[in-house]
Image (cartoon, rainbow, N blue to C red; front, top):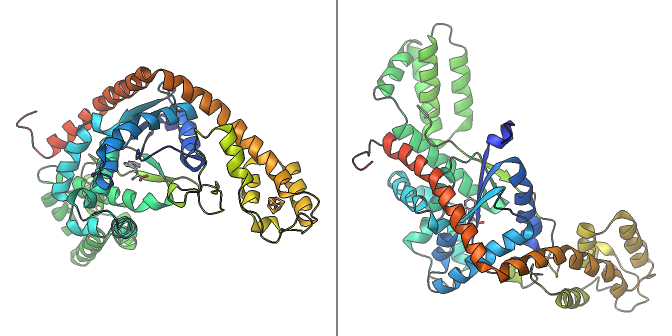
Length: 406
Ligand code: TRP
Ligand code: SF4
């Protein structure tokens, strides 16, 4: 094992098993995971319980998708020797931590998460006024905190969930992370700053802890920084008291934002199953060809002799992902001068997508032949994940003095 600092950092991420993965997932998420598994200790899991929050009426489909998704990951290059790959529901500690965290999570925090109302609006055909769906982001918090993750690679749409995770961790540490007389000692230390400064400190602390006011935190830190007469112990207490962290049991994770995927869909919008504009990782070469051949192009090119503008054409966006400079220049000139036709222009894209998918599909086929091996990988991954999860849960229970069955 290498001991570079990043190797010591832990990465956790999950994906809901809601169907076959496509090029959007590959360019937006999987390629990033493949890279991360080399530099960090990674835990990647199939979030089957999360799928259940929205698909509880058709749970049978989820089971089928769990293995398929694992095959897509393995085929894309996620390796069980570099990362721990597992199924969320095989690690019941996620659910146990979720339950414990639910005791300290104010309802308002969950109701205010933007995806809660958004998704209810978007998926109107489903009844998502459920307890489970409200708890979706808290279950995600448990997924992350149970491994004490440092980084969580996610897209922009998940940032609010990581933010909630940080707040829940902070609240947990605040409630349970203190020496028995921590509060009293901290209050006494505050008094040593003098009446005026102590009041200022308490006000800033309240502003930060009740409203998450980051500016108040900064001013509070600066105030402590400027104190000359505090002992080292008192200083540390006051910093911990200000930040709400006596002892840190659940560290706050950072979102590792995945760059917005450049992968467009066949119609130029973001590639997504709900827009019906995807190329799946299992798409046959013939189907790839057919889908790209029928992609819309710049409408100005009604006839072969009409010049066009790549900026108005979704095919150009594919060239941006797949083509080298020479090819891109050939497209730019040929399109604007009507020197090339659209079918001609699409040819290198077809070839590039087919070439990208070929090795992925070869590996997927191997795993398809050997589903027992896929199940073994998930089972072994779950066992390894459980070891870590159990340790965190023991820390959590101890901090809560909930030790009668340990
Ligand atoms: N909510 C995430 C999504 O829809 C999936 C997910 C579940 C997740 N648990 C997680 C992502 C924990 C990161 C970490 O994409
Ligand atoms: Fe699009 Fe290429 Fe046709 Fe231009 S030539 S409109 S870039 S497909």
